[in-house]
Length: 171
Image (cartoon, rainbow, N blue to C red; front, side, top):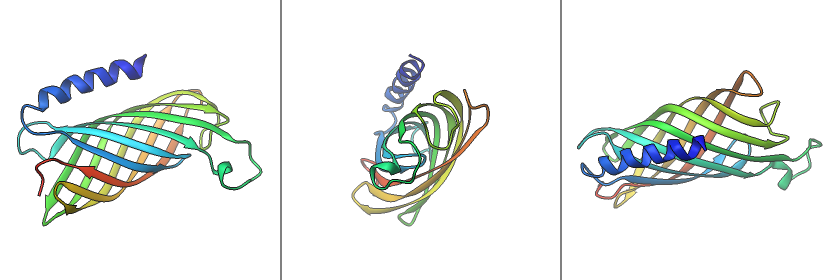
């Protein structure tokens, strides 16, 4: 319920931002604590701004046990929603990215990197490097640090994505 309401607010904000320029869309494999996919939608705060409102949904549905038996029980799925700001400072076809904001995630089953399954709320901060390689297409890695509180009172988790970002009109 909380995720749905937060997503609805961000989509409404993105629609308002669409009046300034087209939104960008990202898709990337996501690593840690499990393996899955991250999809994002962002829109500039105002025309020609490096700052964008961003929503990122992550579903990590594969555990390391899917590939090799490490002796630990199989972890459940990990579902996460990030809502915040993204800054892409483009120069000569390359950009450093900075992202931060609020997040919520649900760790199910016997999760990796947290002691207890359940719902968590927290903050995230990430940095990355993107390179343009086509008409509006960029590729690159991002490393994000998550600090959250839930059934496990103190959670600190790194996450890595390496993917594509489509930015209509960006050259």
